[in-house]
Amino acid sequence: MKNEKIPYKIYLSENEMPKAWYNLRADMKDKPAPLLNPGTHEPMTAEELEGVFCSELVKQELDNDTPYIEIPEAIREFYKMYRPSPLVRAYCLEEKLQTPAKIYYKFEGNNTSGSHKLNSAIAQAYYAKQQGLKGVTTETGAGQWGTALSMACSYFDLDCKVYMVKCSYEQKPFRREVMRTYGASVTPSPSMETEVGKKILAEHPGTTGSLGCAISEAVEKAVTNEGYRYVLGSVLNQVLLHQSIIGLETKAALDKYGIKPDIIVGSAGGGSNLGGLIAPFMGQKLRNEADYRIIAVEPASCPSFTRGVYAYDFCDTGMVCPLAKMYTLGSDFIPSANHAGGLRYHGMSSILSKLYDDGFMEATSVKQTEVFDAA
Image 1 (spheres, one colour):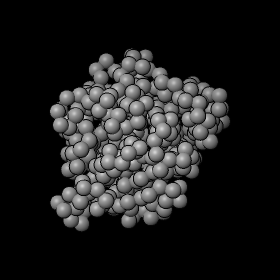
Image 2 (cartoon, one colour):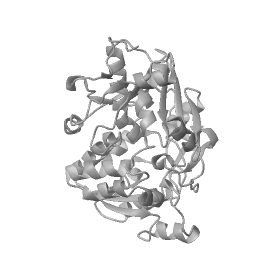
Image 3 (tube, one colour):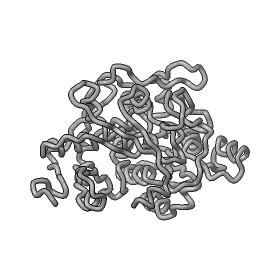
Image 4 (cartoon, helix red, strand yellow):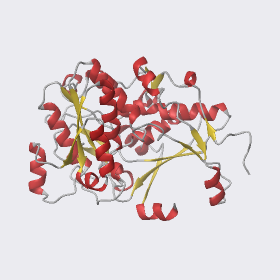
């Protein structure tokens, strides 16, 4: 029976929207391991990273100590087009499951790009514009990140070059064309446009591609074209920082009605969705202020947490990116052509990998056919 005291959707007002992102690393006693230079295997310096990423984003990437980082006003104004997003009580699902549990989900699909990815895309495009760049390059799996970045670049009048995993490029033509509608160029990866793409195709003829392949191509395109930088939609510390707005809003909405969750569940590919959702709750857990059971759910076809190893590995298949210490299936891992395109990355965020290895969260993997059957 519906509890009339709690509405189907819990909304926050514009004034209640967070004005700062939360940096989870500030509350981690044991910090995530640093990125390593692929040539020297020494920790990457800001100067080295600035050859690939925007300068301000490099500062955010390396900041282990600042708990809250102010969201620039221009980004907050953009957020107001679709934020705060609603927290929805799943009354019908509870009834179908005949469960005593109260289920809530944070709905991030109420923006033109269709996913949570826009939260970081607009931030990264903003910093690229502030730096005076011509454009950015990136990769995308199922296309949510590519769509979000295309939209953000269109807003700031930046060029956008997207390398889309070939399997998804063919499976999801509508997503591909939405990116092009926003003005982005979209190339199926691996391609003959880059040296690393040619190399991968020579070694794996007919491959359906992977996010690791697409990352290699996007990075090469960025570093060989003046006025461009590479941006990434998940995995990196800066991306989890931007996505913390999801968790901050979720916690504010729950606090509004005096609700404390027992279990927090999120899908896990590279870590942006899960990391963003759990950020303030994990912060409480790290500060011993509250306890939660936190569960990462990943696809059985690309289970980096549950079947990977915790070690330094390349972030890309072409081995041109820095090495990150993370749960990984190997940078040369090419998953089966399953439908969960955005969850096909071979590794996991360094932040989440460290938290998982230290026992602060759990992980499980599921087969896509079982998910469809359950639905």
